[in-house]
Length: 70
Image 1 (tube, rainbow, N blue to C red):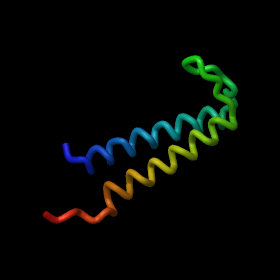
Image 2: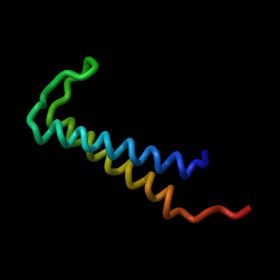
Image 3: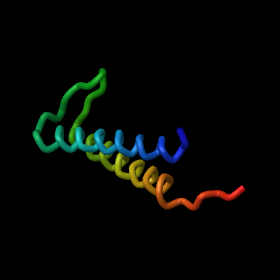
């Protein structure tokens, strides 16, 4: 697999992670313990913000970055 294809795949995973965070936040299931960590609404907001930054970085790398010529 090419690195750009991996970036597209990872952007889908990050989108899923963002949607799970949004769902937990919207339903009101927070605060909760997850794998020994306390997940609060404030932490979820930072978590989703980081997901957005990573998503746009991956999309930029996969689609908009110029290909290097040899």
